[in-house]
Length: 598
Ligand SMILES: *[C@@H]1O[C@H](CO)[C@@H](O)[C@H](O)[C@H]1NC(C)=O
Ligand SMILES: *[C@@H]1O[C@H](CO)[C@@H](O)[C@H](O)[C@H]1NC(C)=O
Ligand SMILES: *[C@@H]1O[C@H](CO)[C@@H](O)[C@H](O)[C@H]1NC(C)=O
Image (cartoon, rainbow, N blue to C red; front, side):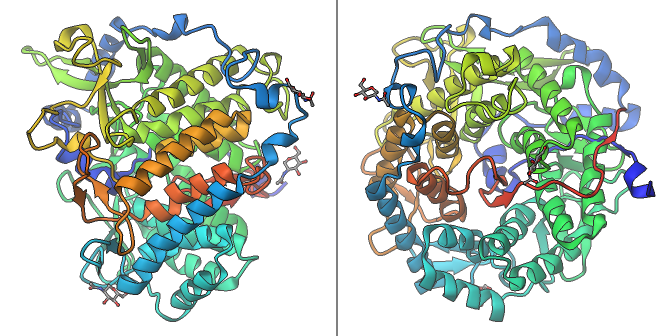
């Protein structure tokens, strides 16, 4: 046997975060500190022991509250909205809704053609001022163009696609002497190129560009631990530390490069991409904290977690997402990712999944590290849920049909007997979380806020101030809206609706998605072209912020389109979507992948 076949790699968990996507959320919006700076200093000195000792405090409070989760079977054995699929062979779910699908295509054209008219080639677009801007002074890296290309291919917009391709062929360069975010560049640009390569029928242009970009990013992994630097100078091909906290990297950021680097490795047979990305997972696995929870920051030198918030929202989110998706991407050949996913889910259930007091809404909370007067580290449960967490409902349902299935493939929707007890738990909780996210669209605009809080006994909120048990913190009539009140065209709820619909055939998910789409059309659409973010989801007419995030075209409109599309298009059996909604084909790797049980 070859060395490669026998080689065992160390397992290492990965963390990923929507760093830039969330940078504002983490700083401007949220008075709670993500990081216990005193703890960080102490941690760096005394290393890991204090955290391990204090971590026990977590287990003292908030045991899981979901045990009394409604006994309803979400998705089957229930008459609730399921008549469509419960008595047919399943074919009915394949029927596209042409009218709604076309409406989403029109919205995409409204966004793309305004960008093309005013700002072609710029990284970001501002529809109200009709201007483009670049991430750095060194010039654009195709952030918006490349993020949008696969959506054009999926929607069949051939002419727009040809012009975008032309731009990539003649204008795009990554030889930019400036600092870019490793994670964002990977998920949006590398991910976009890889998806474009596959969906265009292997157009070599995209693979060449992907290799060029990946080779510029690769040096970020040359650190003491093997965790990547959070930033990269693409011209110098050099990793760059975080400017504020030099040694800190976000868990979600380092663990959300793997699908992209692994698929590129598969395409090129260059194992280096694979090994660098996989080493990150080994480090994370080895750094495992008691009971499998993952803090949102790690130390790039030691490869250990740093005392910091624990959550499924910003800087935590896609760590959990990619644990499951790595297992799916490689056609279930890497059981270590299933183990890590199962482990992480147990921890999430034990400590983060909560139920609100009155409406019994299921949501996920956060754990915030705090110091007592004597300097002891304790953890406070904060009933805060980012919109970003809304990926998690669909992700749990998807996981239920894979890691939680007793047969393969399961029915649509799965039958109870096809799932393990863990699968049933994840299915029910996932469906409940999708519903929760849908419920947070009950605002004046029909759009959901960036961050919601759920009512707890200590917060002084009552039924009148939070009739559905959730509220926007700091929102007051006639006062400037808090940061949390905005909707910036985020995709996470419609992403979960798309997955939930594919797995159940339940038309209510299409209805909810259509309602969200209409709210976007009504409140975010700029007449002269493009879309804008809304500053307060409870304010009509809406006040805008002049920014059209690239994920509108790469994610939000793509997931909405696919929600109404024939279910055989980009089937979940054949594709895994990266965290920026770029579909990558599932493959059976030739490299032996799983690292050793450690
Ligand atoms: C499903 O049920 C509806 C009414 O309940 C009935 O009209 C239809 O024929 C059924 N379809 C199948 C395939 O059994
Ligand atoms: C952004 O970069 C592109 C190069 O890709 C350049 O053509 C354009 O002028 C830049 N835009 C701004 C506003 O600097
Ligand atoms: C995944 O593995 C199964 C066998 O376990 C195989 O039949 C199938 O073709 C594989 N799929 C891909 C895309 O490689």
